[in-house]
Image 1 (tube, rainbow over the protein chains, first blue to last red):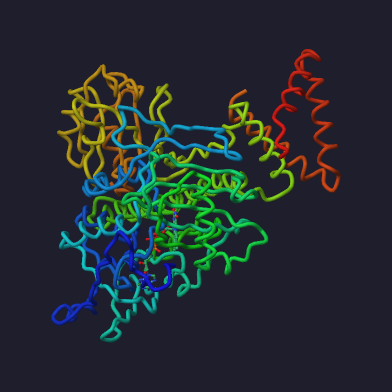
Image 2 (image 1 turned 30 degrees about the horizontal axis):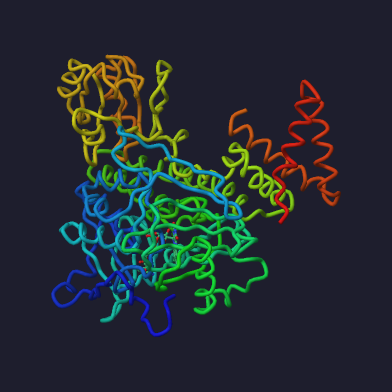
Length: 539
Length: 60
Ligand SMILES: Cc1cc2nc3c(=O)[nH]c(=O)nc-3n(C[C@H](O)[C@H](O)[C@H](O)COP(=O)(O)OP(=O)(O)OC[C@H]3O[C@@H](n4cnc5c(N)ncnc54)[C@H](O)[C@@H]3O)c2cc1C
């Protein structure tokens, strides 16, 4: 929502482009068969399209709207998402615009009770978190899509029907010039929380809603505070509630405040009420200068997901598959990982590098990640919005104690965002017991310094990489057909130490930067067999 | 105790209060305090904790 007199997309800092539906000659091809259709050009659909393009797979992207999503929405992008964007070759504008951060501060009744630092250091290429308004996220992804001939985007084109057939699905789409249908072998449903694909197929999200509603409001102001996330528990301006404050680019500040049980949500989003609430928060943090209201919205914390992210040729990614509470900042980050995960898998299957069974690893891996988010989010929700007397008493006791005893403040540490480990996945091999350090199969590959750059710079973009230390092994692997790219690193080295690797050790890293297998004493044959197994190749 | 262990204790107490309801939380918590005190090596440690808890009263 925006202040009275301002249009839906009349932003103080962002100019929304206007896109046209397919016109003229372009219409001739609308009804042709396609290999992959992606429904929804939100951030998740766009990442999926870019991932497929990197695999050499063309896709058709269908979007109902004529522009990007309205409002700043998901503003916290995690390190792992930047690693994915880097892998797709599109991270540069993100790095330039966004504000990286590592630190959070929590306050109880105006007094600081905790300062936490997310893990960071010179061996990391990216900061643990970056703040960037979602419009820019979408705009930068779009820049890359526009430059990719493999992606055909159809704006103002709404999916109205979908029917699953023997060898794919038939989609019916309406645009300003009419309605048409076409066949797609595969469909990625990236059409968001109110997914039309999901409801057309009669599928329902399962899970629960938490108590508590929050208003998020963006204001533009000159406010002197570093990019540090502030959480205010029981502040004077809202004694029974929690307030979060984030800095975004362009002097935009996100004020996120919890509503009391007695506050009517419809009333709470009236402009005057939002202005009063925001003014009270700004007074509390000592901002005395002018400010302008940019945009606001209301949300409640849900943990909802599909039981299966796949139905035949249709695969759900992003908010269409799961809705998670936003204080874990996992909504968009989780969706980006979904898109990247299915993108390389589908790409490998469609280019004949992998067997079709690889697709079956998508749901266990990504739904597992969502359930992990739910568990963490439930913890955060219990702290932010205690659901019962017992949780309320303990929460308040911990906050009170934290004023003088730092250990209690740690209970307010959100500990957000370590990438999920695909421990139970069929697309991950059993560990080698010889490792005392480093990421086990299923975990995300760690970052390390290598020469003047980083380990991740040495990984193949879109393909498997064998990270090893013994040049003889490297040559043997390179000599075999159908083996992965090889990154042979110095040994001994800091990277080898972090990976717990002896001289003959090797890590096989999947295209999504998760470890697929590792050995202390690798052989070229073992590597090739592992790659066959990880790709479900019939040999 | 690790932060994770503290969190386990925190959660057990919160759930304990809810399970004890409708009994007043203070009765449940007082029982828990006495039992925890018994597990300490000396009365001194218990008395110090009791005094510290009083010093961070959050009443307005
Ligand atoms: C008001 C609001 C505030 C939010 N605030 C936060 C926040 O503060 N922090 C946070 O982490 N997350 C927030 N989120 C969630 C975050 O925006 C989402 O997690 C993220 O956008 C998910 O991306 P997505 O691509 O899966 O879905 P979306 O971004 O919802 O994209 C789906 C796309 O599909 C299109 N579409 C839908 N139906 C059809 C159809 N039938 N045919 C064709 N196209 C269709 C839509 O137009 C849209 O462009 C917020 C969401 C909303 C709506």
